[in-house]
Length: 365
Image 1 (cartoon, rainbow, N blue to C red):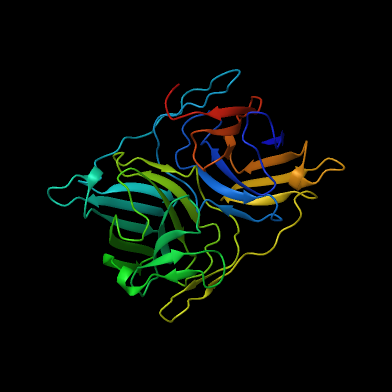
Image 2: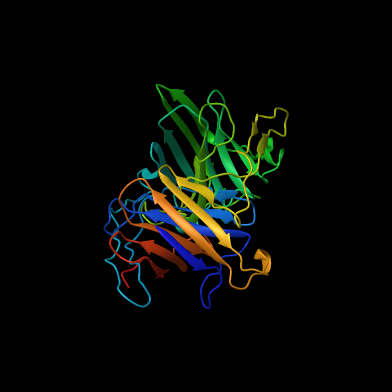
C-alpha cells in the first residue's frame, strides 16, 4: 500500500516532525475483518533519522466487536470479536502476546473482598515462551518504557522487579530489597521452552497499581538467556482485567530500534548493556524503514516544500509505503494515545481505493 498524506490537515490528528504514535494492523486475507493478533502500537520519531520505538508493543488478542466507519462513503463490514472470555478471578485467562509467547493470569481476591474495590488482591502471572530466553512483563501508565516497572526473569536466577528509568546506561535498576515482594517467583528454561511464574500484589506503596479494569502492560523477551537488547521482541498492550479475559493490544506488535540501554542492579552486579542497533538517515532526503513485525515493513519519507523547515512546515507531506508478505488488507493509524478509539487510519483493501477512516469505537455503529 502506498500513499502521500498532508502532515497537518484541519480537524485531523497532526503528524509532527518529532515523536508520533502510530497503530498498524493487517488481515489474514483481502477481506476486511477482525485482525486478531495482527496489530500493534508504536512510537516513531520522524526527526530522529529513522529511529523508531515501538509502544513496547505487538500483537494482541481479542477485543469487542469493531466497526471501522469511513466518514464520507462506504462503511465496511463490522470487525467481529472472534471469541468470548471467562472470569479471571476463578480460572486462569490466556493472552497470546505474540507467536510462541503466551501470558496466563488470574486475579486472587481475598475472602470477604471484591475485585473492584479490593485490599490485598494479587495477580498470578505465567509467561510461556517457545524458546530459551529472558522474559519480561512491565506495568505502565502510558504504554512507554520510561517510567514503567517490570518483572524480569533470567534463566538461572529468580525473577525480580525493576524500575525502567530511561534509555541511558544505568537508568534501568533493580528495585530495592524491601520492594522485592513477589511470591512463588520462578523461571525455568528446559526442552526449548521458558516459563516464568510469579504472584504480585496489585497495589503496592510507591508502585504503579494494577487495576481491576484497563491496564497498560509491556512485554519483551530476549534471543537467548543472556539479558541483552530485545530488538523487535517487545510490545505494549492494554489488558482489561475486569473484561472476562478480553485483552486489547496497544494496537501493538514488534518494534524497531531505541537508544542503548543498560540494566543496572543497584545492589552490585550490572548485567550486560542492551545495545542499540545502529544509526539512521535523514528521512527528508531518503526513505527510512521500520520493521513493524516479521514480514511487515513500513517505509516513509518527509516531503518538505522549498523554503520550509520540517520543524515548522506549512504544506509538508509524508510518503508512506507498507509492504506485507502476504495478500491481505493493511492499515496504518494515527493516534494521540496509542489506542484505537479516537484514532484515524488509512486502510487499504486489495481491489479498492485506499481511504482514510475514523476509528470511533468498538461497537457496530
